[in-house]
Length: 443
Image 1 (cartoon, rainbow, N blue to C red):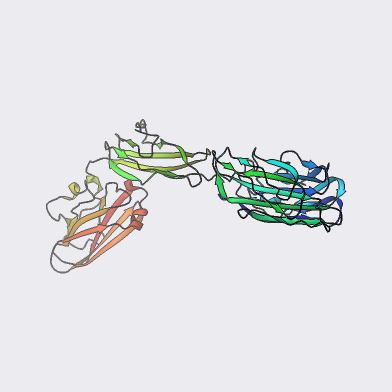
Image 2 (image 1 turned 90 degrees about the vertical axis):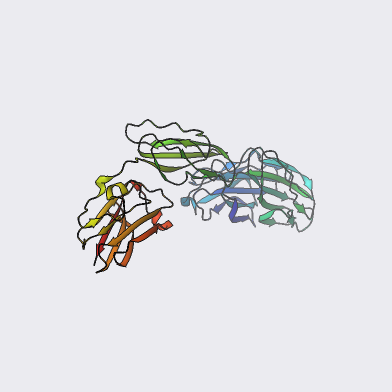
């Protein structure tokens, strides 16, 4: 997930006060807050009362303080929608003007918005630079904070200008005749640094020499779980080696490991060995007919886990003669007999009708059909040239009709038919062990 600043509340006190309140804007679950406060006076301490936020605001590092300026940064991560509209109270040890801002950050790692890289400096210069950041974790971005106080120009208005690469989110000022507190907060979320990178200091240029404090706060974007597919369901004869085709990708990192395991096997069957079960393309051999369900688990470099399953139906090659529920009114078309035809549903001679079997359809149980591509080949015809008949073929899964095909004006000339299932029809097949083909003729 990418980081973004979704809203900013400026703190720009025109008069001195011991306490001031800031209302939390609308937030979503998982959002975080960054609160920046500063004064144009040294030796000040800040207190923050969060009045019922999901988690308390915590100070980042120690306060940046020197003669004439103080600043502090507070953060909280993993907010919830109910935190919207709550009040944060900011107190100072003396009655002073305060400037700063409250930022809502979306997409930060909810385990902690600020990591160990929070740093600060202090001094007096017209180009206060934030500290250099050395990244030790993947995908780290940064927020830059510069607080300036006590300008040398009267009136004391300071203009702060960031580097071109930094997006300004707050530029709040509090002015007076003898004191000034100014705050700039910016970020660079367009760059994500990896472990070996060193991030140079950003420079915020002032139009006058003044005391300042500069902060660099690193953020880690929330980790996205891997995208995993265990591949396409298969139907194979028992004893045939099955080649699995899994995929695993991670849009914000890398795949650290993958593992296959069985979640279901036929009753009483010991799960077969999976060869190369730590790769995306393992194999196994189902010796016993039945249903096998396998799970592919992928773990990314930030320990996020995703899974997906695939089903393999191991079938018997025995002809299903018992699948003829009714043969009255039907005769064999061609050399094959009806029971023998059932052993191969992809190349089958079905039957002719010798009469009008409207109430006497021929029902054939099909061998499990591989999901994804299937063709039914058949022959049909009437016993006599006249009258002609209409044949309706219905592919069913249990009691549910997957699809139908119709042939009209059929006479005693044998029709060779080819039924190629569409992708939509194939997608409806969820239990290939429960498929039947019903053939009905009428005149």
